[in-house]
Amino acid sequence: MNILASLAAAACVVLGAAGFLTPAGRAQSGADRRAKSIDGVFSPLISPAEPGAAVLVVEDGRVVFERGYGVTDLRTRRPVDARTNFRLASVTKQFTAAAVMLLVRDGRLRYDDALGRVFPDFPEYGRTVTIRQLLNHTSGLPDYEELMPTGDPSVSVEQNQIKDAGVLDLLKRQNAAKFSPGTKWDYSNSGYVILGLVVEKVSGSPFGKFLGERIFAPLKMDRTVAYERGKNEVPGRAFGHTREAGVWKETDQSPTSATLGDGGVYSSLADLARWDESLRRHSLLGAADMEPALTPVQTAGGAPVEPDGTTAAYGFGWFLNPWKGRARMWHSGETVGFRTAIQRFPADGLTVIVLANRADLDAPRLALKTADVCLAEGRIPGR
Image (tube, rainbow, N blue to C red; front, side):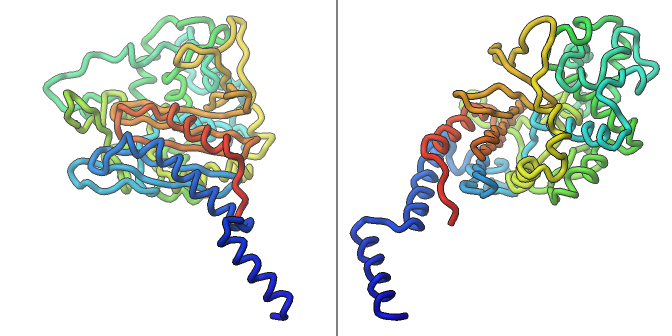
């Protein structure tokens, strides 16, 4: 190193010591400040010995925050980490939609195919429902949760569970839709269970196997599974919990926890980061393939409405309403003992994922609060 270079290097050290950070120092300082702010959102809510949550922030394809809080269950007290698998609940719907989209790209299915074409014995009230209407919640199919018989209290929850074939059977025994297909928007778990069965029927492969071979394996989501009790296992599994009278109880399964297409996938932060990267790079489904999934549905009956009653937009497995003027694609999941959310801001290069194995956390709100921290501070330069 020559004398001028040595002097320049020394000057940099002095400036750094005096509080004038180099670009690398500024990036480090910004990242640390942001991490502390995000941690401040979650740390007060979760003690180390309680059921917890996993939090991921991805910016421009880089993981900038990844942290587990609490434990996977109260028996092993294993700490939650990036490889812990949570039941995704309705966040599963984006994978079901992607499976359908792959079959459409393959030329084996069309969005305007009628349900009666796939299931010729489906009752008249639903025969004209299209694949597109199932995807965007305008099918009008009855809610299977409201049609289920009362469970036998003398047996376990698992023994009272309904599976996808049982949902189809229930729907086949009905004689009327909630409304004429395409005229209204109504969030439908029935529709996504049926979509999983459509994938199975058209592909000739069990739905979980199709997801594994066509989505999870290509993206190296090696620990993500569509869970079927007695057929497979969930590696590194978190169990759901609910606090009752101040005491945590394991509430991991319900009578509707065995269906697949509407909420049966388990995944982790590590694997969902790979899923997010595939969406960013269009490595599984191209931009043209994704276009219909990111086009808000329109109905003759008025604007779609979110689960909380506010005006929304919905595509295929994604809510699309903006947030604070920023383009967004998002979904949440809620089932016994679990709360989940993914919030993506494509134009800002930002994704926030929150997975919780406890029923008292508002995962969508916490994810947005985290996004607020990141968007307020702007992008942190890569190091």
